[in-house]
Length: 300
Image (cartoon, rainbow, N blue to C red):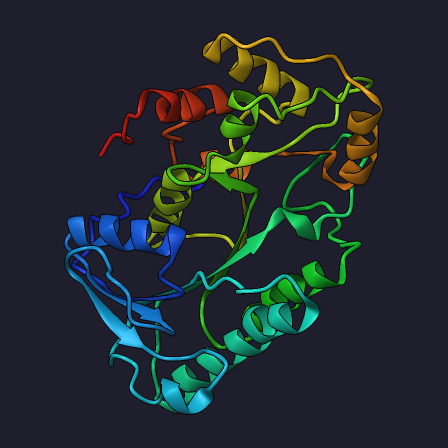
């Protein structure tokens, strides 16, 4: 049965903190402000934020810097990202940093109506083309992804209504590596059985987070991915056709690369997200990459 359909901005304006106001968080903040909400963006270093988003300079790894959170917060989105790819950096942000923020909210008697933790589909260890959804076992092979799972557990055990959102590979403005690889002739087809990849445009990341923030009856877990888990070769061939480029056939290097990335071979289902009433701006990679190739912005 579909979840209740609720206009996410039908209620009075919310006071919202975005902890980690970077690539996704800044776009989320822009959308929330445009919808009439009061928004703070927490960043460790000063940086320009979208108009209307107030800067809150603090360090999630340093609990003392979280003493001056805005009062009476209605919603919190934890969208912080590690600045390095090592185990310590992941633990500091996705586990300990979230714990520090939750502790600060409790210590100050805050009672947000929803806290959202931005996680990743990397928590799934499936690698043989399986479909995964919110009921699938999450048994990450990488230690780094275990910290994401620990963060999800931490939120679930907190006193606040919480929702974890597992996003797949994020692309969008400024993240066009695949396009440039094809354009520059560096892309290589893998060949062999399909190795499925999953992705979601940055604007849909921000859109679905805004949607879930104030959704009545939101569940504790959602997958955020588009509607077409396509093989890497299919995406590369499509991009090459759009650019008028012929890709070289698979070679030994490509086969080695395919084996290296075999852990990406799964298909993420977004049925629960769509059942909640969210409608994707870019339902597949074709619409998303097509807009990037044409230099178009997302619909507002």
